[in-house]
Length: 511
Length: 126
Image (tube, rainbow over all chains, first blue to last red; front, side):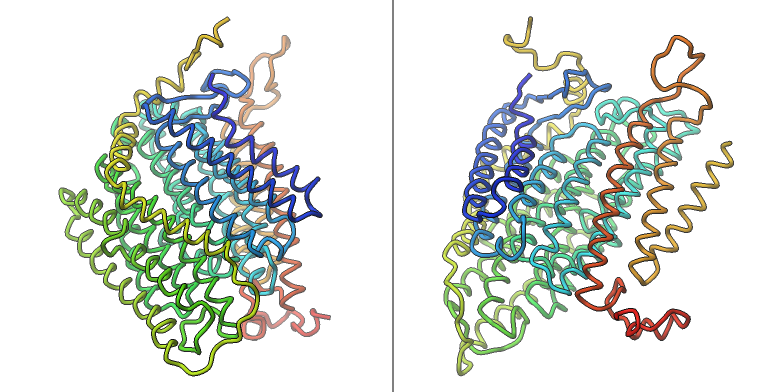
């Protein structure tokens, strides 16, 4: 077995207790450990991506129990891609947090590592009860991170966030119980084999369970009608936390891709493409609602939150088409929208800190410190988020529109994606001109206080380099994504590897 | 037996959903606890109901019950216990910081519309 697969989970899991026990009084030590661990995770993710890029599916049987009896971790192209995205985002976000945010409350670094453990685990697991456990790990860590820094408004938003997610966890368990009671398995690959064979009398129970599970993933992915928690949570969380949470909505999207193509896909008989008729309308409404929210936002943090909702709508629209071409486009947009959304939250915080009193409210005020540096940063992030050329948002939307051409609902998809892009451009244009252009002419200035935060700028720049790199290397990246989509839509290899008793046998393992 | 378990799950879920929709955090926490109890029983029932059957291999056993849901329920109980502790602490902190135990944090207006019989917010704050 290839033992490297478990390290993205093991490394943060070991590091976090060390941070709590040994480094809780020394912030410098905690920063060094946390940064070193996150960089190591990035190196691991690159290594695993290199392995997965060859197209082999690697599995890791915990305790050497063969699937479906034991728990397995599975690494394929999609999982490796998500691991790399998480690790890259985490490095930049941690760099931003080191510039002061991690001092605002206790145990930031430990919670951050637990969060990474949960996210990595959710991407790697091949078993959906284990998926529940990793969801809980990432949620418990996110509850702590959400209220990091304290304050009445933040804790109020935190309570609502926790209640919503506890309801989600309850539904998750009910859905798991329903699916298990009909199919008798918790392994996703095994489920894919058993779904077509489910007795007609049990179909209704299976479908109810599967759609309840879709509702849970939709809750994570902030899909209408269960999107309402996101603006309150993201706008009230501290900036690095909100930026890290940008990957959390993608965990929901990832689970939809994984489960509803593998187990409820083309070969599922009566249950084929179970999610499609529900997902597409919901995604289109999400898209419209998110971008209208961008127009209505009164603070930059809110604007970024609604832009994230809108981008999730675009992403899930592409996923809901359930074709390899659309999935490749969706994955490209997923990479892009995670980075662009995270960058917006960081920029909103940089601006808010330089406008004491006004914070990130979209109102004309006097000039603030470093306005000349923040304006171009916001400009780049806004271009990326709204999907204007030349950055990757444009390429992503183009790929999605191209993939939607043959679909029955193509008219709706084209009309909504294009109209909402216009709404987003107006919203972002108005926000930018209010904050920067009009403020340039105002007399006086905000008192500049605090440091210049060089690390925070480096972190924001690093994240914004993502969309630029996605644009420059769009060719090789989309070749990888095409291969990923092809692998997802041909799940036979995945199922065979996971269920073979001695998968990935190498010379060292054979006695 | 089936009727008993099913109605217990149903009643607990209904009560839980009702309580979660209340305005104050205490009721919401109680509702979440009831919901997790209901879920645990439901999860347990997904392995079929069996009386006097061991889940582990035994020479005396005439049959077995599915051990997997029992393991799942154990995990779910531990997780929901931890989560309840988290939400209680958060709710308490929220009450201490904002001076109201309402989930939405607008005590006065909600107070007059829906909660005539409860003591007013000024009194509970003391």
